[in-house]
Every structure is written in structure tokens, then in C-alpha cells.
Image (tube, rainbow over all chains, first blue to last red; front, side, top):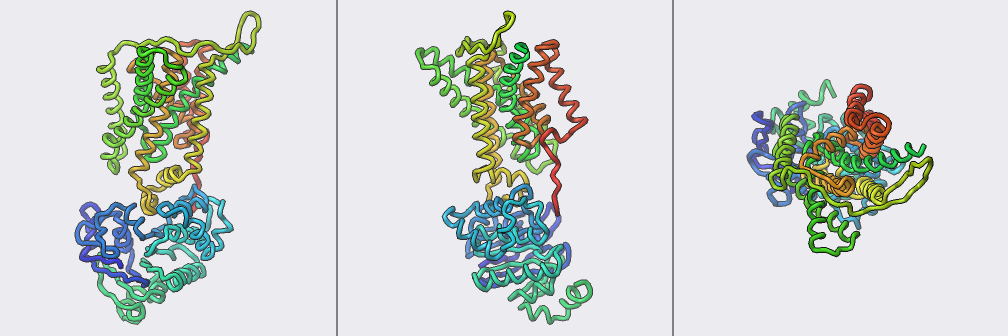
Length: 236
Length: 304
């Protein structure tokens, strides 16, 4: 569904991605794990064309989207819940959800809203509250809800667990699983919380300094010595 | 009391005009964080286009007044919108992502360029025009002093209220307005949900320019004289109004415009007319010292 072929991405003269090959198939949850500064967020943002890859190709459903402007990429069926959630803090929860639906046909709006309410009943309770006043967990729910309002065929999630209490993290991950299983949503998940991410994902990639060093099914990676040593034992 | 009322009416009229221009400053600042110093010139072009339209219509002769007003309004808004779009496209967009002062310098350059362009095209002399709308209501009279509100003043105030209401509705209720507010708060995220950020910014310039054009038309009618240099002072005052109200805030710009108009009218009425500009700009200094965020601009407390 989505494919990276030898993708390099630069920030000015700094090479953040050094020739990456990644593939996400329809209906999968694929996770990308790695340390701080390995290039996980850059990989995810390159999918959206912010920044664009400096060489290599990104294809989505067979179409080359490497040089497409961001707003066109996301209106073609990719939606993002970005790092730090980036809720529109001076807009209400409802307005944030409306913003998510900006690329869709208005006739789907009510139906999509219902679906988000069902997944996140908390959001429905807080419709008129400003985004900035929500708790971290609620903001994460809103970020995912806003992404779903765009009726994507693929959902990109950047560190949805960041800064959240373990209980809330579990809740969020369960919802991601539910979206994937019930709605057959393809998910690309960037996480530092490698244990949770690998348990959830069908497949995973390990990113080190802008290069993919390992890939495999979630279980394989969880069992691998290197992954255990670098990402699972100790810190997490 | 009568004198006071008269100055109040004059002040509100003047304040309407400043408020309309101030909205352009505040919207552009809100969305890309820069002061568009060429905005005063856009207003000046609006004034010229409306005067030229009136002159052409007078030459043809016998055009019904409301129709002439409408024609001038449409022409002025059309021309300034094109200018607003062009200015953004040529002078600011290439510099987006550059260092912060670059677009500011470019804006000042654009302002000088437009002034000189109009000077070359239209001449440096002051252009007079006969009054189109005359007469008014006498509200009260005492000791030989009559308080009047002219039809023109009523026209200006009502048109301003209508436009500001429409504008507030656009910003708060339409998807265009939401896209503008989203772009204002987080440009990257706006792009990530599919907002065409470049187009949204262009639209903002066009909307601001169109309002400035209306102000230009009003000034042409109200004072009856314009020249290529009027944009500078009016622009500075409208900018002051935007800062006074809280730059980036739409109601702030309206309130700020009104206050600057009132301050000017009362100062001219009770003190000296020569120093009315000093009064207006002293306000700018005081606001910057004591309340840098302006009257309605509040620093937002945000949870991370």
C-alpha cells in the first residue's frame, strides 16, 4: 500500500534518512521503533511530504507521491496524528474534528462523527471545550479522532504514548487495535515504547541513525537479542 | 453636551474607517506573523480606484447614485484584491521561511514602490472630488450649535457594521474561516489535515485588501481629496489601532480602530487639531509600554 524505495531525506545539509526501504501492506499495523533522533518522525513526515524526500521514491497505492504537496497527499487517504499531537488549542473539540474533515465530502460528516464518538466517548462529553484545556490523554484521543474524520485508508501515528500514564497508553493502544481489526485500517506506528508497539504490530522495522537495521514480525523483533538489549530492557 | 455628541459622531465615523483597515493588519499578522506595511498603500489604491470610477461614471453622466456607489465599491475591491494577492505572491511568499525581518523589509519596499507607482501614474497633486452624498439629520440644537449626522456618516457606519458582521461570521462559522484559524495556530498541522496553506494565506491577503478598499472608498467620499501619500498615515494609524486592540485579534482591531477614531476626534475637538496624530501615536507608545498584548489580545495559556 505504501512503499519507501531508497529514500533519503535532508534537513539542510544534514542527512536524516540514509536510504530507507519500508513497505506497509493493506490491513497491517507496521511499527517503526528506534532511539531518540534515529529519524522515526522524519520517516513519518516524509510520507506526508514535510519535508519531501531528497532522493528515492515514496509510493502510495502505486502512485508516486514523493514530490506531491502535503495537502494533496493527505486528501488522497493518508491521515496523521503527529508528534506532540498538535491539537488546535484555541479551537473547540468539535471544531478540531471539523478541521479533520476538511478534505471530505460534507455528507459523510455526521456518520464519521458518530464513529469517532463511539471510539472516544470522552470527546463527545467535551465537545465545546477548547482543545488546549484537555488532558494529555484526551488530546491524543482528539488527535486520532481528528485524523479519522478525514476517512483515511491509512493512519500514521507518531508516538501516541508520549507523556501519557500507563493506563491511558494501554487504552490508546487498544483503540488502535480495534480500528485496525474492525475497520481494516492500515496503521503505521512510530514509537519509542518498543514493547507495546511490537506487541501490537504485525511487523516492525528498527531504525538506527537514519538506516533500517532490522525488520521482521512483531514477535520476531520482540524475541531478538539486539532489540531486547537496545530497546526493551532497562528503560522501558 | 452637544459639542461632545458631535465629536462622538465624527469619531465613530473615523474609527469605522480605521477599523476596516486595521482588520487587514491584524489578519495578516495572525496568519503569518508579519506586519504588512504595504497595507496602507492598498487602501490608498482603493481610494484612487473608487475616485476614478466615480469620475468615469460622472463623465458618462446620469448614473443613479446607489448604483455608482456599488460600482465604485466593486471596482475598488476587485483591484485591491488583485494587488493584495500579487503583493503576497511576489513580495512575501518567496521569503517565507527566511529570517524574520526579511518580509518586513520587503513590505516596506513594496510600500515605497506602490506609492511611487501611483505618483507616476496619477501625478503628485492632491485630487479633489465633489461631494456625492450631501445633507444629513439635525439631531439636536442648543444655543445656536447644531448636532448633525450626515447621510454619508450613516452610510459609513452602517456599511462598516455590516462588513464587520459578515467578516466575523466568515471567520467563526465557515470552513474557510476555520482553515484560516487553523493555519494561524499551527501551519504545519493545518497542512497535515489537508488545508492548502498557500491558498489560505493568499485568501487572507485578499480579504484584508478588500476591506481596505472599502475604507478607501469611504475616505474618498468623506474628505473628497486624496493623494498618493494618504496610505502612509492612515496605515500607521490603523496599525496603531490593531496593536491597541491586540494584534492578531479581530474584535481587537475593530475596537482599536474605534478608539483611535474617537481619540482623534475628541483631541481635535477639545485640544488642538494640529496634534491629533501625536495623540494617536502616543497611545501606541503607552500601549506598548503598559500592555504589549493590547486590550483584547491575551497571551494564551496552553497545556502541553
